[in-house]
Length: 349
Ligand SMILES: [Zn+2]
Image (tube, rainbow, N blue to C red; front, side):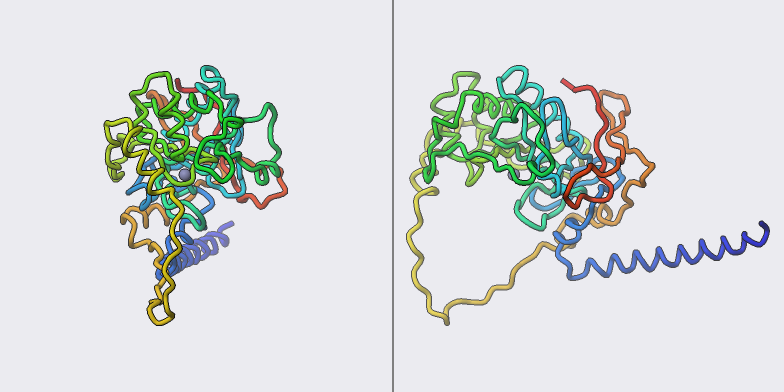
């Protein structure tokens, strides 16, 4: 026993040298490596207080939690992407929306698309935003009355609400419940804006008979006819979160919408032919770690939760277990070895 002590000391000092070398290696690895690869490579969140850091399209997330793969009124899709992470306020809002939609709006439940990566940051594919754990894509396809298998969550496609090859809503797909779902989300004070295709905005402008005060928060944008994009305001305790400009007070159903249909969505004229000489080779510009708020380097290099560790967050003054690491769900996909899933908790209304 006595002999094992020096050995243990030797081992622990070797371990600390290895850890220093490892962290130097990590810093070196960030040189020249695009931030999307650094953040895209993280399978688990940083165990730190929950903070949205920076701007929606230039930042990161600490203390993120994952939305459960299944709730009473939601199913998370595309599990293999590992983009089910968000600020606890976002997870809470999605849970609340799912419940409100199902019990008040005739929308059977949410199919939840991309939120953020475990530590936010730029993504390897798609999405300029979704970087600080406050953005969520919610499919405009109602949840079926059964649970999708893991395979179906990868392969099932969302349904566009637009008529094929057009910019107007398809009356065979669109229902009043679509409108109620979107306006429910827009009505939440914590929601800063909801992005939808201009065709959807037009439909709401023409048909929404409820409270129209929040129509201004429904913002037209390209794409977004398979899903809507919900964006939360900066949470109060996220001091490093940069707010987006307020939405205009006007409903946006007039001139602004006209511009989308008369200008933005008009088919583009073919670009003038350019001779080879005039084409300047452009260097692809990747966002680097140094482009993000400096706190994001700390978030990137912070410890992930250990297998025994539970991470807590506070809601209504009481600490609750936000997630506990569980064994990977049985699935034919390559899931992260350790996928934390929130424990069941009461809905916050
Ligand atoms: Zn989105």
